[in-house]
Image 1 (cartoon, rainbow, N blue to C red):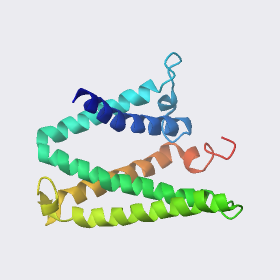
Image 2 (image 1 turned 120 degrees about the vertical axis):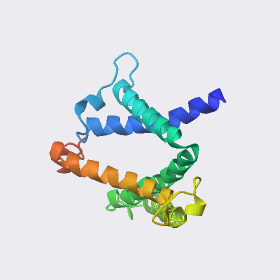
Image 3 (image 1 turned 90 degrees about the vertical axis):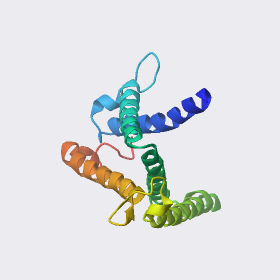
Image 4 (image 1 turned 45 degrees about the horizontal axis):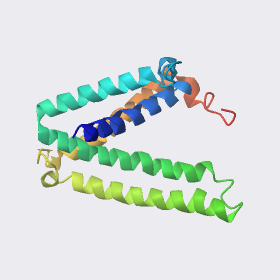
Length: 184
């Protein structure tokens, strides 16, 4: 149980910390998120922030209801499909000028990412449709006859979009492509 808890903690905190580190390094987040401890060579600030935010979020959700925690986990599946799906399509777009330079490029830069993106898009659509049914959720909760999982999944995606738009004004260089260039 202890090893499983540690593994779960790592899969929750570390990807978020890595994302914050990268966003801090490229100017989408404040520079403090890009700091790396010289002794441990790890992004301590980003890791602590990710851990604290995750701990607070899951503590609050668990105190509300353990069934709501199950709904939150299901909603995360929707967000993961969205995130990795758009990343797969972004790979095809990023390598668009190289796609047909070799058979290897066709397979690894077009076929695999495109197939992965289509698969994730289909799982995303199916998950969204299922999430709308209150009976399919862990809690059975609904708002206006639509399942809580749908609102959690899209609410967090919407919150992320609002944050992105807000950061567009706070960190405009990132959104103008000045901090993440082909040279970096």
